[in-house]
Image (cartoon, rainbow, N blue to C red; front, side, top):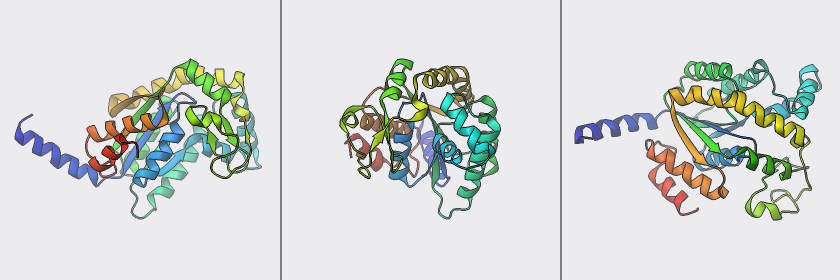
Length: 256
């Protein structure tokens, strides 16, 4: 690239820094999407939205949709687009009202092409279409199944304890010392259905964004801290955005 070209690129990156950042994280169940989303949100002051957490919270409401959501999720079936779209559109509207909004991390991503198209339209509506990053945390179906059948959740605060590294040794929740238990929707039959649905629907939905946006693929079968370092490097290399400065990326490499 010529000197003029480099200057133009730097100018474009500077303008990009002023735009709210939208990060959409895809991955098979158990890939650590939620963990990485929380790390990114904490490091860069982003809002964290988890479709899974939002659906589980909605299922606690004592109405028709709440009760049916509980049954559907326990069986491993997927919630229809109309329901999840309503949930994340309400969330986007709330985020738009926030002052000094830096951006958000969507843990889970749209599961159907229809959802991808509508989310893309929604991001344009809220004027966040210019600074979007798509991250795919890649793990095999075998690793996904192994992690899901063994991971646990705190009965008190709901903290999800992944079955990886030092987390395997935990007897109590590291956050509130509450008791740990297996999640109801992590039964064998439900997990198999979720993996089939991911291949059938989520991969095409992800490919929709892959054609339109910069796509980042990360090896998810490594320690959590290494996955995070790789994400920081990838975000930095694709344009030094305000929420992932060179300093932040360097700190990520050093394991901070």
